[in-house]
Length: 298
Image (cartoon, rainbow, N blue to C red; front, side):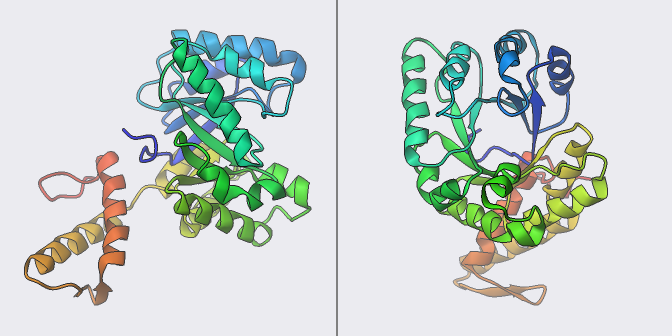
């Protein structure tokens, strides 16, 4: 599966400080598991966390989920040690925090190419955290800085600390929308920030629905209990799958008959609507919600 088309409804971020937590997370139903070497790890614990990552990547079964590591930022004293610790490991993706300019991405890309030349896994993708005002201003450029980039992730906590903007849907609306547009322009995914209230699953559901409406394809999770809610919200519903099937089949039949625009269920269907329905259909197929016989799976 292409890195740019892989499902990333839920990305569970797990501190690499405790091997037992990684072991538990390996069996969860998140689309991506991100082992964290950055914010969740105190400086004195980073060597041990790197060792836990190496142990986990060489001994645990992660199923078909995407497995990645959030390294420390390129301007920190921990960055190079983090990247070198991943040499030779079967890492799918690397999350780069606090990306402020295309040069930040280029540094990681160059070093990964050198590690690949020494035998490390080829094709490791990059996912970039937009967490500062400078980073937001450069989001469109950093998203295109390397063909490894598969997503932009909005980091709300650091962004509010940097800007003084309130951590509310209204306060963050502009920044989140801008990340979505920058990602769409670069043809990469946009992933939304964490919902910090771990026990507030109703609030998480509302926040995830808001994110989906804004155009995000997924959301970060910081606790296993958040994963099922996020997965549900970012998956097409049976009604949405049925609608997509009706629209696609009707449009294809009309096109074969020489028509360019039709109505389905009283709504105009043109090329733009078709693209939306095809995107929904692609997600449904990946989730097993669309079968060849025409029935929508439960």
